[in-house]
Image 1: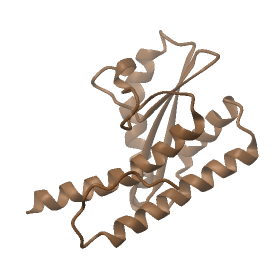
Image 2 (image 1 turned 45 degrees about the horizontal axis):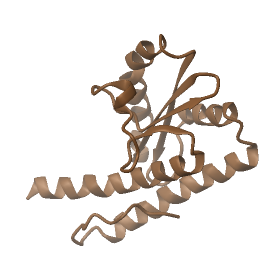
Image 3 (image 1 turned 180 degrees about the vertical axis):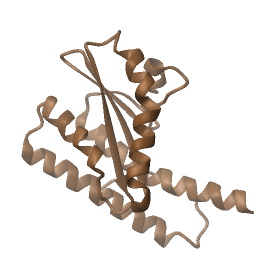
Length: 169
């Protein structure tokens, strides 16, 4: 019974994570590989050991590795450090294939609070030419999706989880 509850909970959290990731991919449209259904797996570039959420390749042959983490506020710093450490070797390995490899640690809480590490996300948006007004829209939209998905998960907490489609806002 405990295994079933854990599985349902993880699927619910994946819904929130993948809904945010789907928005980012849809908005940028420059995603090379994405760890959401319907896109090529990032492991084509990174191998089977690592599967970052999203890879962007911009015109300067710079590869951005985006890793999204959505968790509890109390784990925000710990999650950001864990992800940074996890991808350190991958970044070093890929540096020989690309002019530059940059890690974007998009670590946020289930209520839409961004960690300090998310400044790399702003840097990436600047590098690919997104103006400040659009950046603000993207950030607000990501926060909105996190909050709405968290509310949806809360409302479904005592119900059978049927694996609903990703939330689109």
